Amino acid sequence: MHKRRAKILSTIAWFMVKFNILALPMYIIIISGFSYEPFRVMIASLANLVLNGMGYATTQYGPWIGSSIASIDVSWDSTGWKSMYALVALVLATPVKSSKLNFLAIGLPAVFLLNIARIVTTIGVTLSFGIQYFDILHLLLWREGLITAVVAIWGLWLWREKDNIRKDQGIFRWALDKRDR
Image (tube, rainbow, N blue to C red):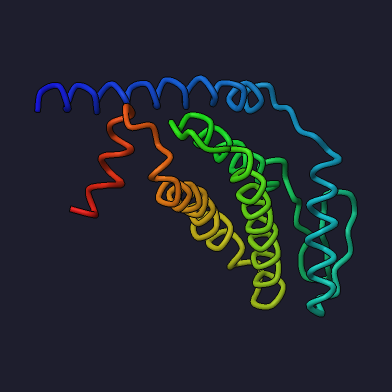
């Protein structure tokens, strides 16, 4: 049992080392204050298109979406880039033998679309019920909701790939197989 526990701790440590190394570029981007304006504008355009399709009279000015009630900036942080980056880092750090790119081809668009839904619902609720609901919906519900969605998408992929996880990678195999005991 001591060997098994050591293997599990070693696997956890190696996963954490890889995940944190992969997170370094994200922190460099955050610290540098980098923002890619064309991506912000594209996200705002998609959100504005959906809002108009839902009957809201909104207008887009660059990364800003406005109406007679409010003008809302789709900030660099609101583009969902950190969520998509975190999903990539989680997948790359995970000891799975199968193709990670196949999953990312599905997982990244899913997170992207969830983020568009986050922006649209936040703006829609704000326009329908007032600006006083913006912060609670944006900061409390959706920020944590997107984090939860990223972890859930990754977790579902892990569960689906449980047979492709290297047998020598203790904790992932152990955690996924434990439910079968």
